[in-house]
Every structure is written in C-alpha cells, then in structure tokens.
Amino acid sequence: MWTSQWGTLIGKDLRLHGSAIALAMAGALALLAAGTQLAPQGIGPRVSLVFNVNILLTLLWSEWLVTRERSKRTFAWLRTLPVDDRVLAGSKFVTAAGCCVLFWSLSTSLFARELWQPTGVGVTLLCMVLSFGGLGIAARLRFSWRIGQLAPLCIVGLPVLLFIVFAGNGTTRRDALIALWTAPWGRTVVAASLFLVYCVIVLITVHWLTRAETVDLVD
Image 1 (spheres, one colour):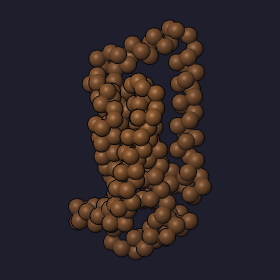
Image 2 (cartoon, one colour):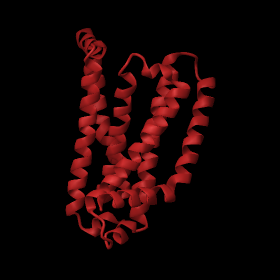
Image 3 (cartoon, rainbow, N blue to C red):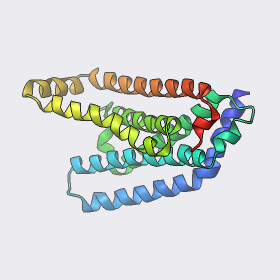
Image 4 (cartoon, rainbow, N blue to C red):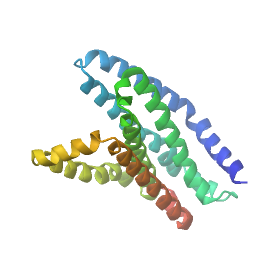
C-alpha cells in the first residue's frame, strides 16, 4: 500500500513540475556554462559558482513542490484521500532530494570535477545542499509562504556567521579546522553529521505533519 502511495505522490509531482524542473536545470546549466567562461579563471571562482547555483535551486524546488500546493489548497484535497501523512510529507523530501542529487551530479561533472577530488569533498558539499534543501521543504510546509521563504536563510545564516567568526579568530583555530578537513576521517565525519541533520529535519517535519490540522497546510 505504501509503495503505491509513494509512487502516486512522486509521480504527481513529476507530472506537475517535471517540465519546469527540467527547464530550470537546463537554464542553470547554461548559466554555469556562460559563468565559467566569463568568470575569472581559477578553481575557486568556478566551484563557488557551481555550489551557489545548487543552493539557490533548492529554494526553487521547495517553492514548486510545497508553496504552490499550499496556495492551491492541494494539501486539503490530498488529506481527503486515503494517503498516509508520513508518505505525503516524505514524498516531498524524496522528490526535492532527487532534484538536488541530479543537478549536483550534472553541474559538478560538467563544470567542477575538482569538487570530487580529494575523495569526500563532493559528498560533503552535496550533504550541505541536501540539508539546506530539506530545511527549505520543512520551512515551507510548517510556515506561511512569507516566513517559509526567509526561515531557511535565517536559520543557516547564524551558524555560518558564527563559523566565519570562529574560523577567522586566530591562526590556531584555522589550523584546527584545516586539520579536521584534511584528516582521512574528517570529511566523513562532516558529511555524516550533515546527513544526520538532514534526517532529523525530515523526521521532525513528518512528525509535525501527522499531527497538523489541514488548515495549517494551506495559505
């Protein structure tokens, strides 16, 4: 039964948004192609551009997969059907994660192969993208569209700011962070921690949705 529900809900999202998602990916790849030609030559600017475009697209996936359905009251209709709330919430995360992984694989393979060397860098950065994307889905499910747009940026902004302050305050701390990152187990620990954060976001959101009123899911 659950398998059928998963397939139906994910298939619905792909039918509704598949063309737009494909066009967005194609446009973003074209933007990266132009950007890598126009930007200053060097690994740093190129990989930063690829990573930032991946982050920005996660906001687009959550906008299409959640905000549009809230505004059109699709969630209210889905809740009249024999669909498990856990599958309803989980299907959004699965679809968004699939978009993240697909575009990350395409963009890094074409424009930033350096992100996959040394081993573990690409996986760690992908986990960052997944975590931010998961936070976007969770925020747009939980809050109204106005708050849902700003919440991921605010939630991530403070830790990033603290990290910058921490990393920039003295060479000892910078050296410790560099040692952690370059250690054979360092990137594995970071990637595992980020993936754990992503899983916690999913579990909390699914738990909330199973107890939420239908009115909480429409704008």
